[in-house]
Length: 179
Image (tube, rainbow, N blue to C red; front, side, top):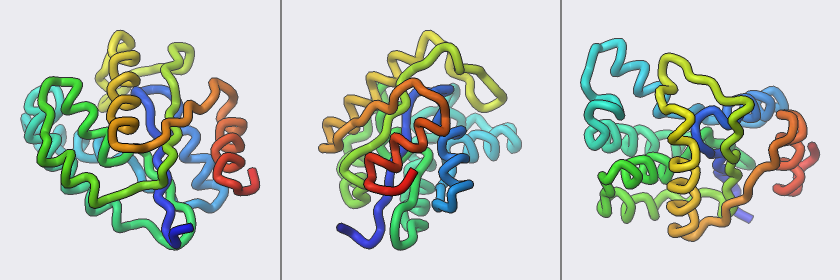
C-alpha cells in the first residue's frame, strides 16, 4: 500500500461532496478543497473572463496547473480531494474542449484506484455564487465524470443517497478505516 493515498470524492455539482468532506475533515483527515471554486472566486473578484462560462479552455489550463500543485499537498496516510485533475478534464471534454495533452499529462498524477462518486440527487441540489450549473446539467456532468475516470483506469464507486454521516462511514469502511 502506498504511503500516500490520494482519495477522490467527486460528482456533479450539488451532490453533497463538500458536506461529506467537511465531516471527514472533522474526523481528522486532511481534505484538499475544490480548486475550481477557489479559482472561479478569484477570477470573479478580478472581473476576469477566465471563468468556465466565458473562456473554459483558458480556465481549464490554469485549473490543471493548480490541481497539479494540490496533488503534492498529500501527506502520509489518507488525503481526501474534493475533485481531482480528471474532473477538470471531464468538464472540458463535455464542453467540446478535449485536451489530449492535458489528459496524457494527468497520468503522472495517480490517485487511489477507486474514486467515490456522489450521484445526482435533486433533493439536495442548490445553486450559489460559484455553482452556476443548472439541474438539467447534473446527469450530463455525472456521465462525463464516470466516463473520464473509467477511461483512465479508475474504479468508480457510487456513494449511496444516505445521510452525510452514513456516506462518510461508507467511504471509510470501504477504505478499511473505522467509521
